Length: 232
Image (cartoon, rainbow, N blue to C red):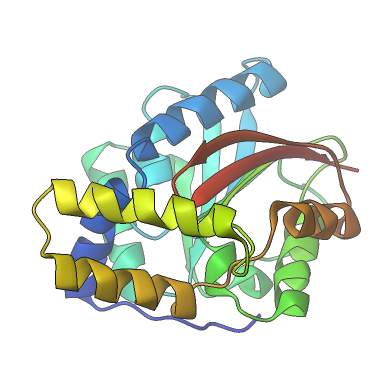
């Protein structure tokens, strides 16, 4: 799986801060996903695969409140994984967390597949559509039949006014917290060129092709949406 973005320590901190401006409901997403997983897993012991685990936000949101869950997190960024490891240590989760530096291809295949998986704010960093599909197929292969999967990604048609309207709202979040107008315009141009936007229908198509069913969007804020589904 290709890796198309790397982070240094300063970028890690900036990314975490800017994400909460880009997605005002960022922390709520993790709460919603936790409730969804709980409903699907019936409070049993469960193994979760976290794709894009750098930063450790999934660990801190779900680990302390679900003592029967174990986590395998994968991320290509050493700096992001260091942050995730620190959070696991601070929360006393080390015995339930395995962190892997690399991509989904570095996650060992096993007869014991995962009970659930998440891929939050990763897909739009992959520009090639076939690489997006490859990632989703790889995640599906690691899941038990019927296992829930949550995907959160930027989405939209670059040539559609609907996305431009959402971009204007996105810019407003940054203006309201004090960013200079010129900087916000620069950030808007950057996200449109560096993030890979595809339509919601294309995301759902890729999920179906990867082997997921019961696909539905559960959340949308600004430029980002979230989808729930199940592995066939």
